[in-house]
Length: 70
Image (tube, rainbow, N blue to C red; front, side):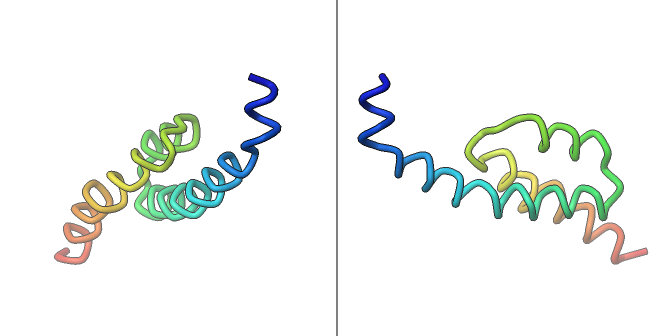
């Protein structure tokens, strides 16, 4: 396993470069929309940005549209 990590460290770098922007956007939207439980879940759970992308394009979008209509 250690040999794998030494030879393929770039995989972790790519994963971090992919995950960090999505997590940042999702956390920002959750905070802006006052969704405390989503913020905590997004902060704690690491799913290689899958949960973050789902949140951004479904949950947050619905909340933003509902807020805009008021």
